[in-house]
Structure formats: C-alpha cells, structure tokens
Amino acid sequence: MKVIVLSSGGVDSTTALAMAVKKYGNENVISLSVFYGQKHDREMQAAENVAKYYGTEHIKMDMSPIFDYSDCSLLSHSQREIPKESYADQIKKTKGAPVSTYVPFRNGLFLSAAACAALSKGCSEIYYGAHSDDSAGNAYPDCSPEFNEAMNKAIYEGSGKQLVIKAPFVNMNKADVVKIGLDMGVPYELTWSCYEGGDKPCGMCGTCIDRRAAFEKNGAKDPLEEIV
Amino acid sequence: MKVIVLSSGGVDSTTALAMAVKKYGNENVISLSVFYGQKHDREMQAAENVAKYYGTEHIKMDMSPIFDYSDCSLLSHSQREIPKESYADQIKKTKGAPVSTYVPFRNGLFLSAAACAALSKGCSEIYYGAHSDDSAGNAYPDCSPEFNEAMNKAIYEGSGKQLVIKAPFVNMNKADVVKIGLDMGVPYELTWSCYEGGDKPCGMCGTCIDRRAAFEKNGAKDPLEEIV
Image (cartoon, rainbow over all chains, first blue to last red; front, side, top):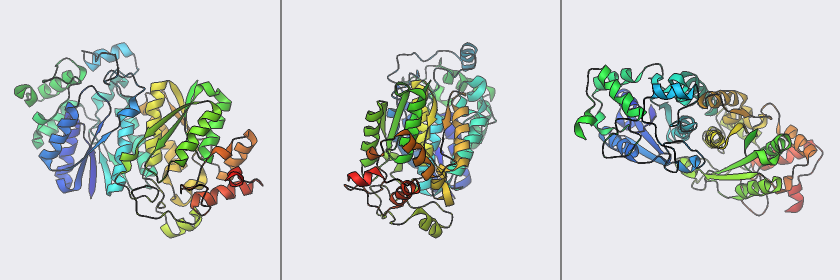
C-alpha cells in the first residue's frame, strides 16, 4: 500500500513521516510539502532534507497565490509581526478566535491537495501531524479532532471511498509526539519549526517555545539547539 | 454579508452565482474560477464574462500543477480521450468507479481554496453548484450530498466556525437548476459546458448531452445553440 505524507519540515510532520516509513517502507511513501507564501523557505528546505534522509519521493507545490488576500502574520506580504509569545498567552488575548499565525484553512487546502495527488499516485492514506496543542483554545481550528474527522469523511466520500486521512497525533500533545519520534530516532536536527527565517531559531515565537517545551518534557535537548 | 461563489462558467455555477447576486447584491459577491489544466480555457473565459455581466469581483487561480500526476481525460497532458457518450452510459461501464472525466478530489480542492480566499476577504458563505445528476452512480463522488455535508462540516470547524458552504442544488437535478435559472433570466448564452474547446459545443460529450436534456425538459432551447 502507498501513502502520502504532508511534510512541513517541522517536528510533528517529520515524526508522522517516520511512522509511515516504518510501517510501509520508504518506497511506498511520498512526502508532499507546500509553499504558501511564508516569510522564509527554511521549512521547505528542511522537508526536502528529511525526504532525502528517508529516501522518499518528494513533491513540492507552490500555493502562495491562494493566500494573496490574507493578512496572516506568517506571510511575506503581511505587515503584521509574528508574536513573540507562547500560544497559551496568545489565546488569552484572542478569546476564542484563531491566532495571528493561523493561515486561513491552510490544513484543509493542504489535505485537499494531498488528496488530489494521492488519488493520482495510487495512494490509499494521507498522513498528517496535527496534534492537540495546536488546536487548544481554537488557536488553529484546522488541527482539531472535529475538523480532522469531518475532513476525513469529506476525502473518503469525495474520492469515491478510495482514500482516508491518518492523523495519529490528533489526540496527543507535542511532547507525546516528540517521545514517539525520539524512540524512533527521528533526525530532528534536520527539521525546522521557527516562524522566523534566520540562521538559527529565534527562540521566542510560539512554535519555538512549544518545541523547546516538548523536548524538555521528555528530558531531552533539541538537537537543533546544539547544532546552530 | 459577503459570499464567494465557485464559478466554472457552466450552467450550474452560473445559476448559483445568479442566486447569490439576487440575495446579497453584486457588491457583496465574489466569483472565483480555477484553472486546473483542462484542454481549453473556454470555461475560464465564460466565467469572466459572467462576472462582468453581473458586476462581481472576480478572482482567478491556477491550480494546474496539483493535477500534474493525474491522467483524467479532461487534462491537457492526458492521452485519454474524452468519452462521447452520456454519463448514464459511462457509469454502466465504470460499475461504481468515477468516470474518466472525474478530476481527483477537484471539488474538495476548489472548496478549500474558496475557503482560504473567503476567510481572507471576510465572506461568510461559499456557494457552489453541485447537483444530483453529477453524483448519480458515483460518476462524480465530490458532488454527492454526503461529500457536501462532510466538507461543509470540515470548513465550518476548520475555519473556527466562521464559514459555511451553500450547495442549493445538491438534491436537485440539472433540469431543476435550469428551471430556476430561466426564471431568473440567467444569461446562459455566456456560459460554456462542453469538455472540448472548439468554436461551438461538440454536442456529444457527457456534459453537452446533459445540458441539452436539461433545457429540453424545461421546453426551452439552449441559447448557446442558437448563437454558435
């Protein structure tokens, strides 16, 4: 059986990719990464390096024009600054609305694009790395179990019952994901999470804070911090 | 309230656009048409002409790279011929599988792209023109009520409960759609349905056959047949 994995180059999707490779073998796994107009391409490069490491076929797509009208702070054309605080602090301020780094319906779009490619390539499953920390407080509603369940049904029905989504971490937190990845020897030194695109992670954006905490909860050090 | 309408330039989506304009006024309606790599651009031109007629803001997107790996017979890189027979005859042969003109998960992708744009543009609803003739016999599974319901839930949840789909024809057939459109004076002479891209409709592909039948059932003549 062949599967496709949405690979952003970050911790969660790289762990999902590792799981898929372990289960099906790298020759049956396709990784897909999508550029959506973010302020840097470090994630895209990381996704490519991870694909090389695991020896999977790698597909890149550019969907940035779709977000031409969005003012999400991650996008290169946006004047909004990326918040330098944890998601927990951000959602106290947004009061139930998505955070400023929510790219509108991005995961729905990416999963749909993955479905298009999966059906063309003869894949039966789409893996993606959404987890419960991302959907907490509605920060990223397109990471929630409710979204995942509905999107899975939409892809199953809309594909003529040929394709399903696997979101193995949807009810886990990021520390759980890192634990699984550490046990599998995932090469986290190749990944990139920071929303900024500098030489090394900024350490202050929501995703840097979350990433560091996830490693610390496992009594581990992020290998990226040692290298950069 | 603002809405976005998926507009292919064909009969169904143009009727959906007319309904949205009638309900909300053209200043509150955005039409969106997507090029996906089909063998001609007559539909794209038709969608633009319809948008000009109704005076709506019109957005065009090119998503053709996403279908690079598909061998759907509608695509310019496919060697497969577009069937010259009715959908009813085609689904007798496919025995429950989608027809060769099914573009893999196209409607899911288009609705997701519409959701991205809708959230960026402050729209609360996405209109699209799926109807029961298209989903009959699983010809186009991404037109079925089951797909529509799940996709609506996915967009509602994934948008943070900001956005819903309106598929007013999902339980109607194409003749019902044309009846509504004729009553509203929809300019069907501006639309294009034929899968081939000649000077005039081929009259023999599935969509030409369906279109003609829908007008005939209403005791009307397709204005496009008189003009071309």
